[in-house]
Length: 41
Image (cartoon, rainbow, N blue to C red; front, side, top):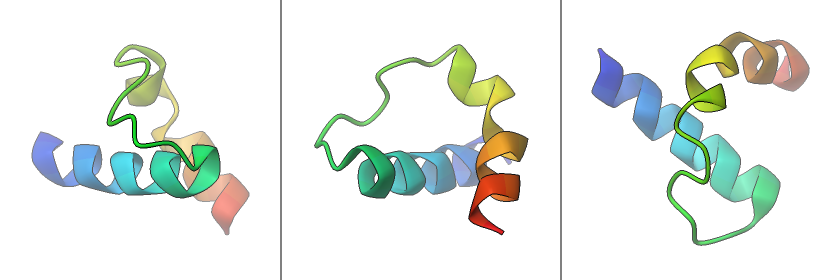
């Protein structure tokens, strides 16, 4: 389950940040899964 979320977050962050970085911050990424979903919808 964590792998799926990590993949989605990584893809979103790559498109939003447009950077080749996989995970700039592993802490906020866990608390920012709903914010990205709401902003994207």
